[in-house]
Image (cartoon, rainbow, N blue to C red; front, side, top):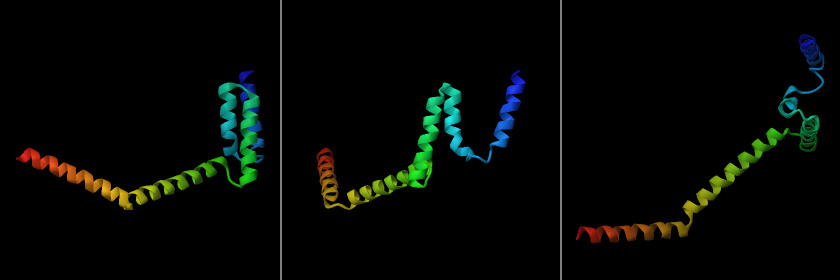
Length: 107
């Protein structure tokens, strides 16, 4: 009985392989196998398809694009901070105070 189910599942997967992209089904299949909740798996697949139709990109492509944008913004903030006049004054004051402390300890 168990071998028959496996054989039937393999036949269905092979025959329906071209109906959908395999990578789109990985998440819902994992959800279905781990939780056993078909509603949750269907919701996962449906939301992925809606995002793909609305944006023209898969959810992973959208997340990758957001990560690149955030990295660029972070680098710009760091660059602006290092080039700002306030940062220069702050560092200069810290260096001057450290020099005063070193001069007092050397006397």
